[in-house]
Amino acid sequence: MEDDFLTRFYESPRPEFAEALYKRLASPPPRAAPWLERLPGGTRMARTIGLTILALALIGACARAVFRPRYVRVSDLIWVYETKATPEYRLVGDDGEIPCATPEGPIPTPTYITVEEAKDRLRMPLRVPTWVPQGFELDHVYAPELEVTTVEQASISWSNAEGQWISLFAWPVGGFWVIQPGKTLQAVQLSAPPDGYEQVVVRGEPAVLLRGRWAWPCSTDVEPGAWDKRRLELVWIEDGVEYTLRTSGDYVSEEDLIRMADSSE
Image 1 (cartoon, rainbow, N blue to C red):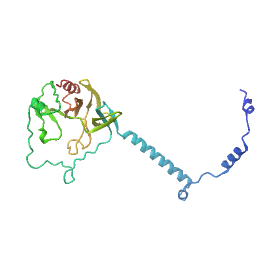
Image 2 (tube, rainbow, N blue to C red; image 1 turned 30 degrees about the horizontal axis):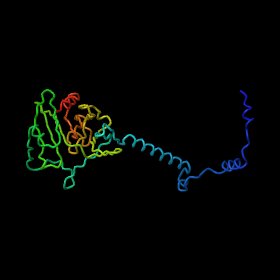
Image 3 (cartoon, helix red, strand yellow; image 1 turned 90 degrees about the horizontal axis):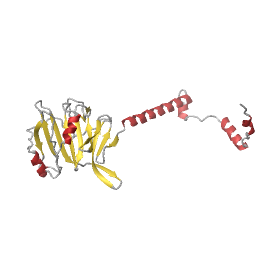
Image 4 (cartoon, rainbow, N blue to C red; image 1 turned 135 degrees about the horizontal axis):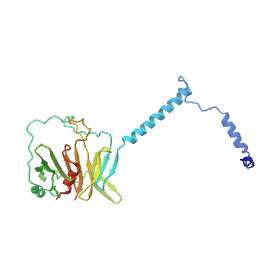
């Protein structure tokens, strides 16, 4: 291959460019900070320290990328706060301590009512499953009088002969604001590890199946704040009401929990 074209189009550099280049090449390399030069090893030590700081910064950036939580949109009204870090639960009593001890004196027994009475008592619509897994029967229904609570709520439980239970909790959507172009919505914020939930469909609408739950600070059988994989929860929204079906074990399948929610009327 002929390379005469390399010399044919060669142009000599301008004198001022050549002068600046020679001056740059002849100047000594930049010195490290005076206090670093006084250390044993001088410039080599400075280079080592610089590389160490850079490596630590990269490790910190990678750690933030792995553990940094993020919000996942399931629908306009349901968002999941994905995090691998254990959330901090803070239940502080009047004395500044977490009240894990059993309160002294008798615990008041809630007054249970029927499903029909609960629907009549509440202003919000209440939908109740009409199908439950085999062996489970209605145990109790609770909905406090509006005169004694500031938030409407209802809880319904089913149990079987083995003492296992399924509970339904219902209350108005609220507490988490989502701002979108032209509108502001009150939504539901859930929290789970990235592999601790699944987006599903209940009654034709987006829902979330949680394969676990964060353990409370007073937990004795699970490390407080850990993700308790024994529990199962299904969360969906209908007519402005947040519903949660919850179990404490694997005695109910995910399919049956979704079927139970789909049967609500």
